[in-house]
Length: 163
Image (cartoon, rainbow, N blue to C red; front, side, top):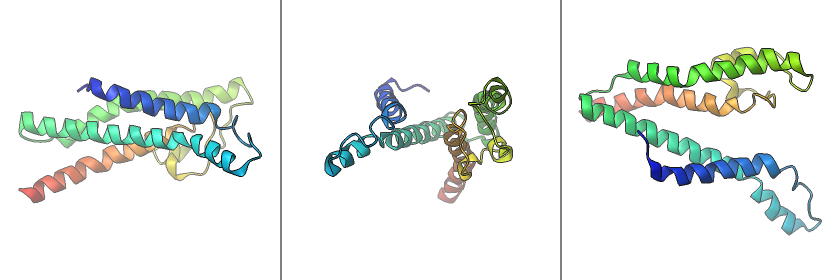
């Protein structure tokens, strides 16, 4: 399902995250004035807001899809839901992991990985302190996957209690 009216929210979220990643280090200690620097610092923390917008949009869309499936088929098939999420996310995720963990470190010393592979492979890298720059962003995918694992179960439990 595609909601074109959500494109503006996606665009805002993207720019908030982009602004934070692209410019936050450039604005560090820009002013000697404490109050002005405090405002500047707050403006560079926009990435978290953008990520939260993406998480809310994802939660809305997944819930909508589950409700639509139940409306059309009269039931929600959790196994099919998991299969669709796996086919949509895992191939690209694991490609990024392979490139980030094994290929990029061979190409340059700038890329590194210190052996915290298991949490990265099982979508628990948001619980580790180690974030290599080239694959550090995968923490947000881990949170999404954890949500996709838990939310359908809660959805079914709520629906069964409602009946």
